[in-house]
Image (spheres, rainbow, N blue to C red):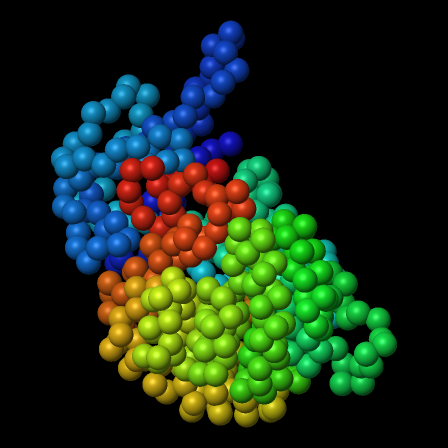
Length: 424
């Protein structure tokens, strides 16, 4: 299989380029071991993902799928190496999408009427779209299970590195409830529940069971819907669906697997509840302020916010056209007005990139580009690039034990010796 180098050369610093290297030469008859290929990027300026500076006129050596050397000027070149002359352009890490959904092509309610084969075809194309856009890693925060990680690692799909949580956890009436208005508690599970894309457990025991099932299905962390949402039917965004003991139940199971909980949380109260209960990845977090900032720092937690939530363009996408959803969106955007000011004031280095697009690939590609633009517009180029590279890579490295992290053998989102550099 061809190797695709996902260290990205870019003049704009917000796009990445994939390079296809030649197939390996035929091994001698007596040997069946394929030697790792060497690719050298020379004459490049390096943005390493962590520092607000460029390292000018460097060479980066990639052996197999890891960076093995970074040198000033030219590196020594083995005879069989592939050399790519950057001609003074900027070399940066492939991007990291810290919040996306492979298996929700029509949002929560629309996807509920789709067959698994349709959803799977969409998911495959969606992951390939991310790779084409220069993303080396994606984190599916609700819906996909670990099969996508396994297929990627086996080289059976042309995907970025993939983290997955499995079915999000929330009770009846929460953000994962996709049932009809006439649904009764005794009714059969809904389609997305049957497919393992959503779940509606209630109480500590059922949450324990669902979280364990998600890990059994290959998930690497737990996702809960703690707040209500905008693009759903029964749950006001101000609502908190989980009691302290229920949220703690999810945290306990995640901890037992050497992992963490990511929560969909909007309000001031929800953020405090999550951080106080041991949740370490706050998704959205639109009412983030200085009181949360101190807890994020103390606990080593991460903030993963989709900035398109603040854009008037959000009201135009297909999944929010229901009048009731439009009303929720309007009230939410009015309440979240201090987020941008607070982030600029506090400059949290734990803020990661989040697009959270549900829809077809052609629509979401545009939303991803807009999300990149908004990151730079609101917070400047360095904050945007850090969020899109090293911070996204830190989430799994810092919040997961090596034995549960499928990519623990190299850093993600940085240009450093030993970090990931290629994608099979």
